[in-house]
Structure formats: C-alpha cells, structure tokens
Length: 87
Image (cartoon, rainbow, N blue to C red):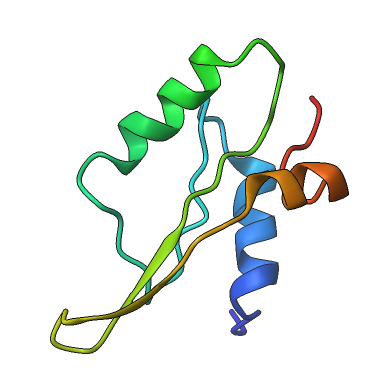
C-alpha cells in the first residue's frame, strides 16, 4: 500500500471510524495528561452542538524542554468561524 501522506491517511481513517470522539494527533504531537478529559468536558458543558475543540500549544525540543507557546485568541477565531463547526 502506498504512503498517502498524513492528511489523506487521516481522512480515510476518519471516514471508517466508529468512535464518538476523534483526535487528530500527528506523530510529533504530545497530549497533556488531562487533554482528553478537558476536551470532552468542553463538549458536554457547551450549550451548542459544536464539533471541534482546540487548545493552545506548547513547543518543546527533542528532549522535552519547553521552548515557547502559542495562545489562541478565541474571539478572533469565533468571529471568523475557523474553529467551531456547527453539527
């Protein structure tokens, strides 16, 4: 089977998935210990039927040493409708 690359492979897997929740986790990503719990809680606490959650990101090096972080401005993202997908 040929290597389709990350996006095509993820999309194929997504189409055949049967789970209630899906995490798009790249090979170089790590989750903080409570990330899944926080994401599911965001869905259950929401008064809307959102289909995506997100979080800020922390960059680390190969040894796991913190380099910097990216903080997402929720107001900007909501106004552009880039993060929340109405289900």
